[in-house]
Amino acid sequence: MTPSSPEKPTERPADLVITGCTVLVHDDGERIGFEEDAAVVVRDGAVAAVTSAAAVEDLAAADRIDARGQVALPGLINCHTHAPMVALRGLAEDLPTEEWFNDVVWPVESNLTERDVELGARLACAEMIRAGVTCFADHYFAMDTVADVVAACGMRALLGQAYFSSQGPEGRRASLEFALRHRDSAGGRITTALAPHAPYTVTEADLAATARLARDHGLPVHLHAAENREQTDTSLARHGATPIGILERTGVLDTDVLIAHGTGITEDDLPLLARAGGRTAVATAPRGYLKFAWPTTTPVRALRDIGIPVGLATDGAASNNSLDVWESMALTSLIQKSAEGDPRWLTSRQALHHATLQSARAVGLGDTVGRIAPGRRADLVLVDLTGPHTQPVHDLAATLVHSARSADVRTTIVDGRVLMRDRELLTLDVPAVVRELGERLPGLTDRGHGRRIQRYDT
Image 1 (cartoon, rainbow, N blue to C red):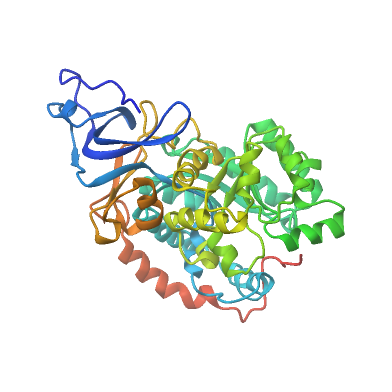
Image 2 (cartoon, rainbow, N blue to C red):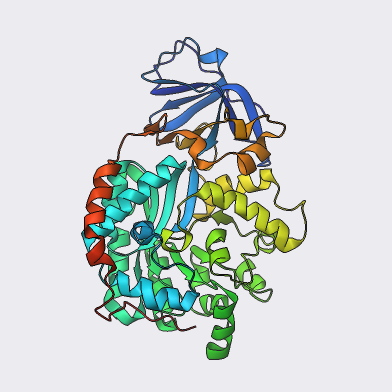
């Protein structure tokens, strides 16, 4: 790996210089490597140089971070979540999927107010920043409120207003209006998508209409599809096509589409995905699949073989109980080894590739973030590897994936702005959020009214 050209002390002052760290870098073949005793120079929200620590000793800077003993990584990306659902964490435990939706989650979600969504989003962003997540793809309700939280706290996000066909044309129209209203907002940190919920809650006519809107307005589509094998079998029996087949015949696969989960993707679906007309990606959130005891997992190897990026995700904390993408990275590696019966598959370096460049591509930001290199936005985290659980280091990639934890993230930076420094959150007041959310929980979690926003029947 060759670092970028050293900065010269005579150049204008940098906004931020991070020095003395080991930097995860990618070469031209996208192979991962590490530059030791390195420095990262940031100007105007972007990486200006990755060079040696010695080269920047005399470089003037508005801010400097001494990162000795730490590794600089591209910020992690949560490629599919429902951030405000942290308010439901632990509420629906040890249940099959159908009971989880129908008996608890969808009745409770009928109580949601914009204030509940705002508080949940704030708490979720705080959790993600502390876990080294700099960007997330969110699919939920009252998304104007979530956009305001993202803009204020400094994160990056791909946001979509979810809708069901049961809402009528207004649901789809609201999703489009949100996407157009907030596209490229917050100084470009917010991108947007159309967000139909899933083929089992959105009709083929509505999916086709969504695909037309996506093409007309240059928007991606973010939805759930083939979440598990049972959904795929039910779709075949009812519609004569798998959920992926429905996405193809409605034109959704001719748009840029982010598919959540995909554990029900079959071998017959692979040619459909391979010939998709748009940029297609899948987000995998393995912890939830284990909790629901789904028999299959996202076929990462098969998808990679046909060129489909697979990004890492957590889903919502109501099912996953956390927004820890670091855990998703380790679990993805371990579960893929088990599923494929091959300990050589999904190595630590491959897992880091999914956590960085593949995740960036999954959310449509492959040219913007996902690597620490000149011209990329300065979204990065500093990870402390001096703890006893990360020593000694024989293989740095393995240490990062299988020994380090999200709590080892010391500093989180988005667009060159420090959002957490030495574990101190700088843009969110967690105690205030927790106090108010706690006061609102009795009204939010009440299920005595008998309502629910939808019915799960696959």
